[in-house]
Length: 429
Image (cartoon, rainbow, N blue to C red; front, side, top):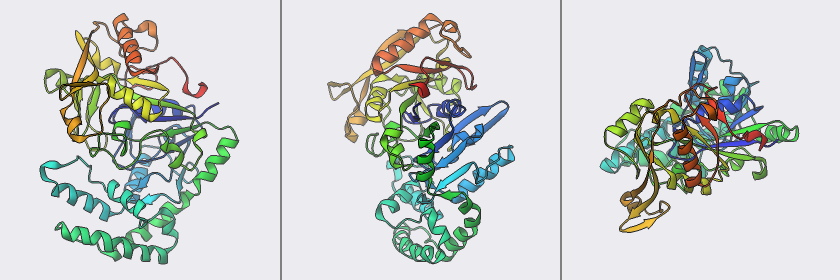
């Protein structure tokens, strides 16, 4: 039986939490493979709502959770998240949470630099959450990062902090911000080490053992394809690669192990933060989508920008992200709308394009080309079979499939875990 990788097919916040939770109940191991605590998954289980940013969603289902080497970890945020879910009755121990020894740590200095640079951009902000994710990834590729394994080697940690602060304090001073103090950072990290190190190991080895034993592995992505640092709407993107191929590099397994790639997309579109959004609606319809869909960022709390489903954008994400099937979420938000629109392409400076180009000016100039579809009067909320859907809702889903050139394999009709229509089981594909 194959493994499954789940990635976002828009700009994030597509409802991955519910889908990952649904799949995690049938997996043996759940792996986070990229990103940091700037993204979140909301899981509704019975009367409990879990908001996770770093912890793999499978922990909620009693499965082994793995934080891979592709994740940048804020140790303070991780331990706080562990304490929070423990208070909700969820047990988190070294037996069910493993952390890659070679994962990069986010330090307070990273967040300080992130916020100082964003402030210096003035009205040209890119919408970063200010949590230090970008600066931590910069340190990784510059080979000055502090890694989880360094917590076990205090002398090495001290020397590496000298090099790291030589760089960051120069930048902070230039931006008019307070420089970081080495001893404070060293004391913080050595104080946290006893709580983190029991979870740390070479997770690539554990995953190889799981693969050889035929255990099901679910790879859980954060953000989405159009926020990918290479393939997204640059520079209004995250600091990591969000496509399915990253699951291999970000967890220490071969690409053949990834298995079926499931992309998640809303039945409409949303985006948090700055950047191009061709199908965004600034009218009552946009506000209605936001109200009905409870569109606020899980981590940031910021209201999401809302608009019509952009099939051209999702088709692009399907192709570069390696998506083999689509999970369409929040179909019920469209209930009762007399008329729906789907973006099928763009007009950019008088020319039609069927994809969003890489150029920043071209992306900003893109105007959507719409196809209009009749809405439906009935309700899709809570539907668990095709027979329970209005005929026009089925027609909408089928048209989405045609335009994005990939099948809808799973349909979500409410936040409840079991309000799901399954057309094709990703683990059986």
